[in-house]
Image 1 (tube, rainbow, N blue to C red):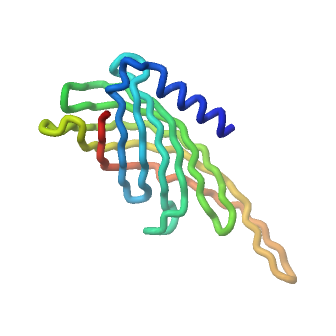
Image 2: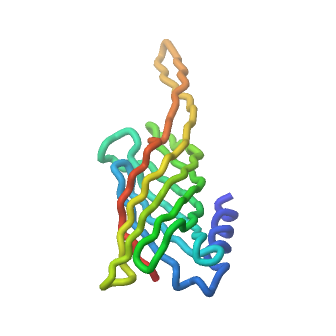
Length: 171
């Protein structure tokens, strides 16, 4: 499965050789996670593909022990030489660690991103992203002693409102 995802990502990001000057890398910071991303034009200049990976902390403040992986696309609703407003969406997996086991939560997101390129340094810029994320998983917990075994079902939900600021480097 991992090989399939890697092959699809390479195919998406190398499909359009003319638009390679429109590729970018980003680093996004939010209260509950940090993500590194790559983007590349897919169709024309308005549709962009995204690939993100990062670390997160869903349940313990300041302890980044969870991982995220997302792939998606964005449509540029407004864009000029310095400013862009994109509507984006994607699918991903949120890996959260509970005690000694790692559980995977499928997630989806949809949102809006504003990016601004600096006038004096045209390859550098900043971005602000606001999105809504959906992701939920049920997992089983087991507590045992010499006398008693207890099984409980718990829910894990990804934080729905996602607000991030970041740095954008175009190459």
